[in-house]
Amino acid sequence: MRLFLLTALTMTAFAANSVLNRAALTGGGITAQDFGTLRLISGALTLAGLTLVMRGGLRLDGPGRLPGVAGLLTYIFGFSWGYQSLDAGLGALILFGTVQVTMFTGSLVQGERPPPTRWLGAALAFGGLVWLLAPGTTPEVSPSHAAAMALAGFGWGVYSLSGRGARDPLSATAANF
Image 1 (tube, helix red, strand yellow):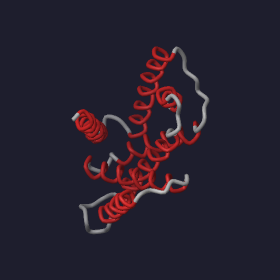
Image 2 (cartoon, helix red, strand yellow):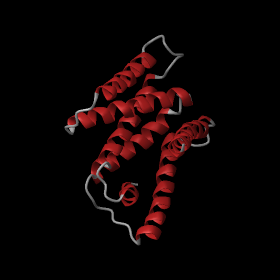
Image 3 (tube, one colour):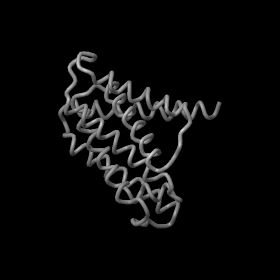
Image 4 (cartoon, one colour):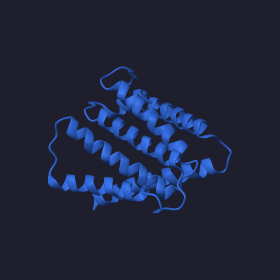
């Protein structure tokens, strides 16, 4: 039951992230670049504070830092750019489908041999993306904004793959931000 509740909380937070980002960008009060930068700065300050309190210091070096930082920047700015036009549900589907395909592909490249159920999941995620973005299946979707969201998903996948072996995930995440 605990796992179910934690999973539900996590999924609610992911959905809220999409809804709040979309709401912030549709009012015209902030640009995608400014919103992405604000998210990075607030995340960096929060994570630096947590790392200083919990670990006593902050190190900015470490393995996988360049792919982690590049993936994070790609995610943040692709996400913000995509939500200028995409509705929250469609953007989340593109994002999460692309994350899954990216991470599955990355695991293959790194030598993992996934069981048949993961192959099925990857095929469903990829097929869903193809169907979702096929001409005539959705209301007018801006190709550039859909591509930005797919790029954000790729960035998130790269970010996640680069952090898989982190010995101290909090410090590694803080350094990436």
